[in-house]
Structures are given as structure tokens and as C-alpha cells.
Length: 95
Image (cartoon, rainbow, N blue to C red):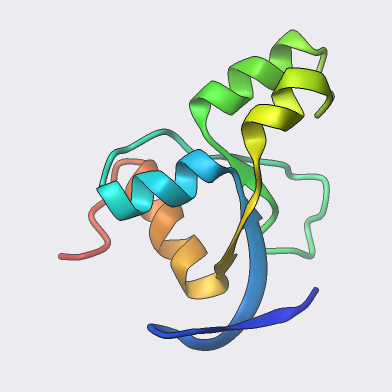
């Protein structure tokens, strides 16, 4: 796992989320938040939105074809990931 430098949170763990989670955070538009539990040692596993969840279900759980094309992963720092998770799951991280 690498690290990234964030203007808000400083040096943080590098995380990956789908484009919709990243855009939704900026626009403050909730899109859902799903992640894999395959790696219990990673507190911030790759995450994706409700629409991406439906697409990956349609492929039988594989990130292939349209599911992968629609995902378009974006990098967030660990702090931004935590804010995105709280927001997209219905919380208000800015209060």
C-alpha cells in the first residue's frame, strides 16, 4: 500500500474508490458505499457505489467489461476515504 499527499489531510494511505464515490463527495451527492471484506488487515479496502455494485452483480461478481469500464477508479487519501465512507453511508462528516 502506498501513500499520497493530500492538501487537507497531509501524508495518508493511498486508497481506491470508483469515480462516482469521488465525484459524489465533491458534489455532496450520496451514491452508496460498498467494499470488499477480503482483506481484514486493510481498514480502507477498495470501494464502489450502488450503481457499480449492480453492474458487478450482473457480471457474477467480476470486475470485467462494462463493470470495470464504469468503475474508473480514483485515488483518495485515507482521510478523504473516511469522509467519503461516512458521507455515502448517510452520515454528515462536516458537522
